Length: 546
Image 1: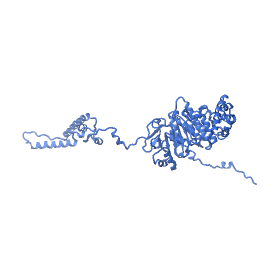
Image 2: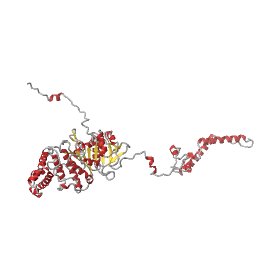
Image 3: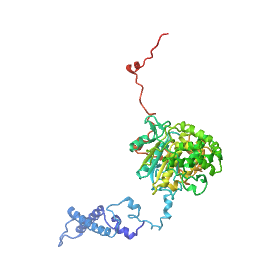
């Protein structure tokens, strides 16, 4: 920005032809001396001697000169928009008081080079706040639904990292609480048991929001979820599930029944066994409908032991052949219902299993780590939810969070889970999984491709270099990223959105969120064992002499 010299002269009082008080006084004194010298040289005869100037006259002259100067300055200042009552160093640098070279015309695009040192924000301003960028300090704002179609193509999210690095805190805040603020639906499969709360780690959060978790336990006393629930699609032609048309809908009862059977057998079914199970499924639905009941896995077991003669003849088979083909599946299914899955799937779906308006928590923390119960129940819940969303008239954005998701990526249930996640976009569903290490997933599992398709990836610290390198290769990260992953501190992660380069993110929580996401209550307990005389003498072992 520059101004003409004429403007400077008028707009700046100190650059104008003005006189300081020191100058005026000097000129007044010089004038006085001149008058006195002239009076001395003039003859006294016939002339009146002129009186010398007094201090009072000089001050009056100075005031008059100052008023005239102020009028000139005010007139000059009124003619320009840039003026100041006193000299200003900053304005002097801009050329208002001192001569300056004329400016050079430029454009905004050409001047962008002057801002190269300023980092741009890693995300847009649309979405939910996660934290701050560790490199630039910019706020991180991201959401799988608002970013869909813009910066990512898959709404699914995965969290990978060692135990105790902050995965659960991020899921509870960014994946649950902040999603509920927007009026969305959140479904949680809670796996981690907390002794201090007597249930899963999401129990305190659910209680705070007035939600009762749905609990599952073996042997009864908990909720049941029917594998043949009418809310799970009963398509009898699901044996054609490889067709393109079938993949437009979630997995149904036939795929679930097959997955449960293969979990019971601990191997894939043979074609003959598969035929016997499919016919038993159809017969179970027909028999239950005639009896006015809701079909469940017990009806399938009875159909395997006593197949229908008319159905056998329709397929050119004898009852003995059909019964023989279904004998092994029937034996293993009976054992599973009475043992591994007792009280879990052997009846109608409990009334408390329904989608709440906001948060729904399925507490599976009491199910054993080993055995088929945990993966089967988690897969049934996943399929039940997918079919429920498929029937909704208006799509409501829904988040499904699965802690300890490695239970759903092994065996035959992985195929069902993979199919349901493929339909996330059509169902307005964001499936969010948590894993400790990629090595938890078998190399031939369908979950490998499921992870690669996640649009958002949060990588927390991996202490072992091999695990960090596996993350770098899995998600095609820049070379050297594995070393960064091994040095991450608690609460920070590498945040990767679609094909963009990852950035280090610091998760930020409010005081209320810190309280609700604390899962270290047992480890931080300060309780001690108090020995008292009363307690020590309550139980005294009586020694009986021989």
